[in-house]
Image (cartoon, rainbow, N blue to C red; front, side):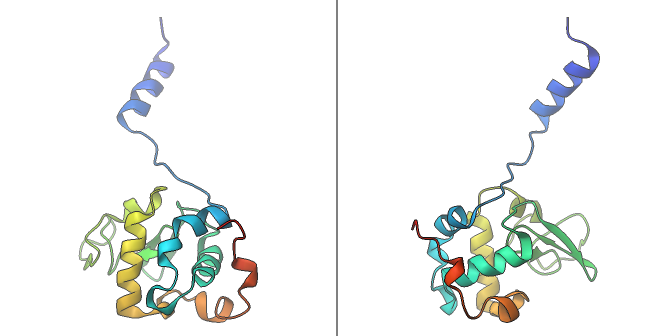
Length: 144
């Protein structure tokens, strides 16, 4: 016979599965983001560098910043790009729940990042200009 805490744990893990988060390596992320290379004139090493400085490649990164919350490796904010329970008046341009940016599937993250790049440019990601606009050799992955 199972004890109450054990059975409660089993039921809760079945009903509420954990988010599938991932701490990528540079080369893993380079492989996943390879279709972003050159999009909007931004190279893959620029993306890898920028994401490293924002999130250290961790898909579950959440940052609270000036009344908005930024989600996932691309730090997509809830004021304009996605909806969450904190800002009910989000424009939700990417038409997605912000929590979707916290899992290990970056497909929707990349689609929204492309919309942001098209609309705001690379300067949306503040780490890019001071840290990732030159001397990018260290951000290349030799395995690609």
